[in-house]
Length: 195
Image (cartoon, rainbow, N blue to C red; front, side, top):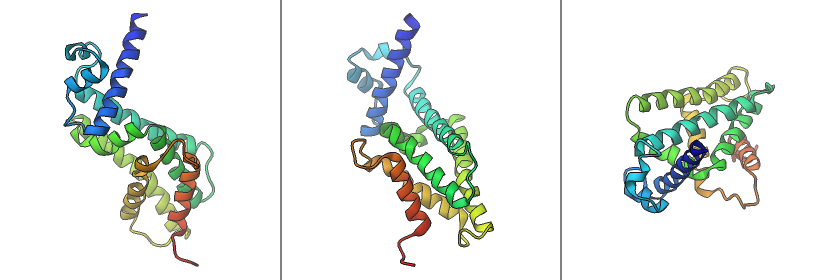
């Protein structure tokens, strides 16, 4: 019973910290700020977490795993074309971002504050994830679906466009995360030029 209380309190600490990291930035958020937002003494935080960075690690690695899990789910059935793969990858990516926009904002902007060896591990995961998009584009170029591309530049362009979604997505908006992902995929695949 105590462990359940501890777990729920730990989750509460992480959620509060996530909001503060998003609003103020990781560096500008102190343990005292977190304790004040939670209505507890700063010393009490240490019974739930080891450090401020532990929370950042939890957010970054949980979100990273969510992105990989979403890709695995998106490709449970193998799509026929590279275009279908890219659309599915974009939709999966958007679904993770919009599921928790606060954690997404922290994930995209505050990972630089991770210390080693966590920073190195995080960067390896990011490179592996980018590789999913790279391989889809490469397949599309090789089979003639896509024009000849600078693959690395194209991957970074796609992900940069997608990663801003947390800034403007509204859960109460007219479009679902899936619809947003499909529209973004259509725009990236077809561009703006009239055929």
